[in-house]
Amino acid sequence: GVLAYRLRNFPQSLAAYEMALAIQPDSIDTRYNFALALKAAGYPVDAVNELEKITAENPGEVRAELALGNLYAQQLRDPAQAREHYLKVLQLDPRNPQATDIHYWLLQNPS
Image (tube, rainbow, N blue to C red; front, top):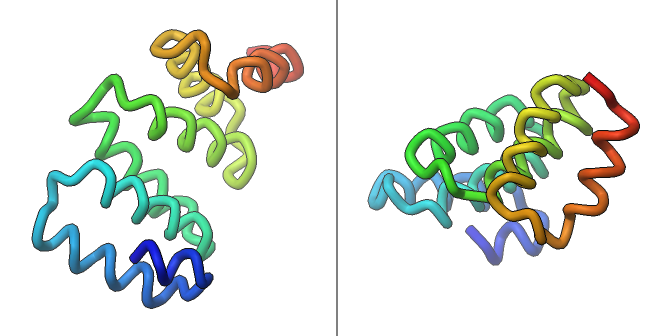
C-alpha cells in the first residue's frame, strides 16, 4: 500500500490497504494510511469516515485529528468541523509542528 501510494498508483494502494485492514482491522497506522490514500485518490468523505474510526477508538490520535481538520478546511469547506478538529490538535499537542498554522487558520476563520 505504501509503495503504491508513493508511486501514485491509488487503485493499487487502496486495494492493498483494504486487504491489510481485512487481516488486521485494529491497525491504526494502516487505517491512517488508507485514509491518506483515499484523500489522494479523491475520496475525501471516505477518508473522513476512516479517520473518524481512528479518533473514536483512539481519542488521543493527533495525526488523525490534524488530517480531519485539513480535510474539513480544504476539501470539504466545512470550517465548523475543521475548527473542532484543529482545536483538538492544539489541546492534545500544543507544540505540534502545525500549531502556528492552525492558530493562524483559527484567527482567519472565527466561529
